[in-house]
Image 1: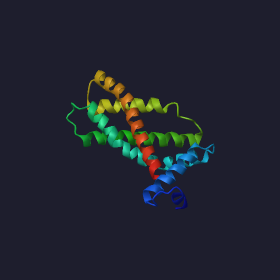
Image 2: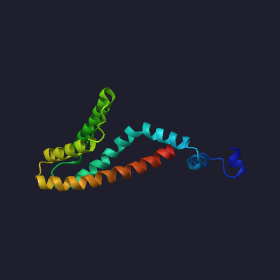
Image 3: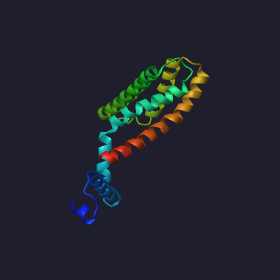
Image 4: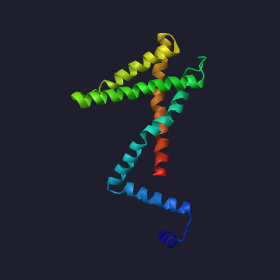
Length: 162
C-alpha cells in the first residue's frame, strides 16, 4: 500500500497484483538462484496438471493427422490417454528399477517409447506400414512442438498464478 501511495497509483487489486509480479520478475533477474529454484519447484508440483491440460491439444494433433479415419475426437483421446498411461507406467518402472538395483534405463526410454508409439499407431489406426511410418515421423515432430507450445502457455499462466 505504501509503495502504491508513493508512486501515486490507485490502491486497486490490479495494481497490487502488478506490483507483486514486478517484484517477482526483479527476484528472477537477481543473482540469487533461490527465486528461480522456487518457481521451478512450483512448476514441478504443477507438472501433472500441465500434462493433463496438454492431452486435448495432443489429441487435436492426432485428429488432424488421422482426419480421414472414421474416428471421432473422443476415440482419438482414448488412444492418447492409453499412450500416455504407458509412458507414465514405463517411467515409473524405469525409476523403480533404478532405485532397486541401481540400473539407469534413461538411455533406453526414448527407444522403447518410440517403438511403442509406432506399434500403437499401427494397431489402433490399422494402416499400412508406409502410412504409419510417415505419420509416425510427422508425429515425432508435431508432438514435441505442441507440448512445447502448451508448456510455454502453462509456464506463463503458472507465473501469473505464482
